[in-house]
Image (cartoon, rainbow, N blue to C red):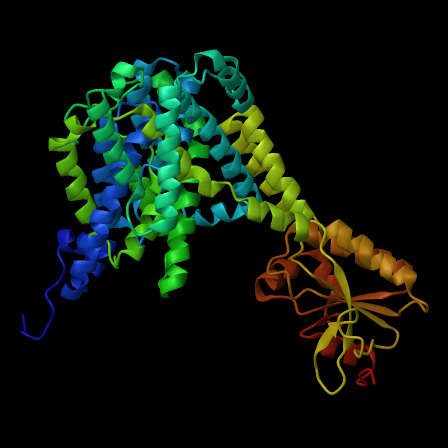
Length: 571
């Protein structure tokens, strides 16, 4: 083989070259290392306390957080397309995992296996969906519905964690049932525990405000450990985490029955939707900020593969973390090396330092979670909806109330349903604009928007402002007939501009044929302009083509008007 000719890639090398890790490893620059190491340690400082807290939300022992965290970090560093996204346990993923698992079994002893199995199913769903190029589906979860869902989810998490700060169990059921349970136990509240919890919350809020670059949760966790040990808080009735075994991740298949796998599959779709929507929105935000690009389908495969791997190491569902990603970027992190540094640090913590968490007060963990999810209480966004977009406000409130009343998964399904209804409502009621020629140009514009535009004499030029499909074509047909009826002098022809329709299905073509027949009965000709290439193929195979061809099909609106005016356009 000539020396200047590149060596052919073997199967193993070709596989490595196709992975995102190949790109960033080849192009990695030494000057990035200092910032990446500092950012990795910052991420570690956030992961350790938050993951232990989120493990409790998910209903699994704290050591399972140490199984999941390094696998998630390494997995996304190898497969992910974002330089900045940090994947791991999050409040949304943890609480949805717990809700799904509790729907299958309320036995705490079964939670580990069920949570791991759920992560495997979620991963499989996302990998399959990404391979099928279904990443666009997350666009149908409307932002107002997601805002309302996350607002309700945050309130639900807060009321669940409030029991730890009050020193009483929060009970079972929806938000209002748990709140009522907490208030009914007012006589049993532990004021020592309340003091610890409130002090932790205030300390976290103060540190975030005064020293935002410091890892507030790690500082408060360390302070809680020291004070608990020094004051023997456990002896004063303050519940503590207790002994956490050393936690080094090793592969372990979820040992659950086939019936449980089937039951988990139903709830996994909602978990998968939120996990990916959360991850992709964060990755997209940083990509836009730094001029990068992330592909939805590839990200879906990456996040899915990470969840699948986490499930095979006794973890629970994971997602992209906004707070950790932002902290890593703020600390100078500029590559996935941040995740690898954090993974090594978490592995070391899990192997050798878990015994340090034994005296940690549960109230401190509750405080960390409550402060972590407060960012989901987007009151300002709700106020913006109320001021500028009332329909979006009602969608957000419906999703929020659905979560509070019906719990998380039904609330999520309600949010998805509201998103679909919003999409259907907007797409099924396109406005039909009447067009006129802008003087001195060849451009046809909406007469409402361009008062100087001139309508073609005796010709109605109409343009549906949206693609035609079976759900809206009848409305467009009715609107065109109403425009004809409302004209001072009935037009001798109607030109329909189909520039917005890239495809014409059979229901659309059938309805346009009906419109042509309706207008013919009134002595009005139907002409069609600007038919897209893909739509032309469908039209050529439909009887409507014979009705229109060759004199009523036009490349442009100007061509149609000129043909109808015998070569004389509107003055």
